[in-house]
Image 1: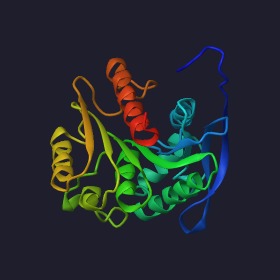
Image 2: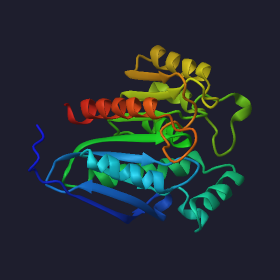
Image 3: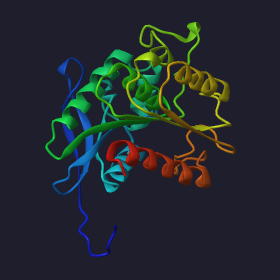
Amino acid sequence: MYTTDQYEGMLAETVILPGYHADLINAYFARPLGQGPFPGMVLIHHLPGWDEWYRETTRKFAARGYVTLCPNLYFRDGHGTPEDVAARVRGAGGVSDEQVLGDVGAALEMLLALPYVNGKVGVFGTCSGGRHAYLCACRIPGFSAVVDCWGGRVVMTPQELTPKQPVAPVDYTADLSCPVLGIFGNDDQSPTPEQVNQLEEALKQNGKSYEFHRYNGAGHGFFYHNRPNYRQEQAVDGWNKVFGFLDKTLIGA
């Protein structure tokens, strides 16, 4: 029960993380102050980059009681504005799935090693980060929950596969070892509603625990309050669904 005289505090800072192949990369870290134990979260940023929205969202999770780490998956691609760096990454066909798995796996290990983390860590991503979150939950043992927000290219045609993305994440569904929350806009074109249906069918066929919420009047990126695609009503309900799912899965509330 919340009382108005209780203590609240947060630490937020940039840290160094040994990622894929032990490369030292930046990550944004935020945690509630106190002994805990607290659940952990790894946030996987979108293709617009390791930007202010993701730093703000890292603090948002910390304010809700989660020790949160957001690695900069584009650190190796040089300095500049998030938009400039993301343009270079996009021009190179994105980052490889194996590199993402290495960076995110290192972030998970770092959180699990902290004495004030309760041993449960979830993974959250939007857009390309939603795809990566689903992929990581299938390929990296140890996650206790995954939140996929409108992750495009989770379902892929054979023509869409590339050397950097050689397998569609949906094809790893049998290896998924934690519950999934999916947040989607019905006006989205990546993923389309039909692709969301295909993902749901794969989860059903493999007997996985999942919860999908699909929003009318919302397209891609409808949580992004700093962009024209923001949809206030759907975003507020979507965030409530995210924290309800994570509180139940990682805290047991």
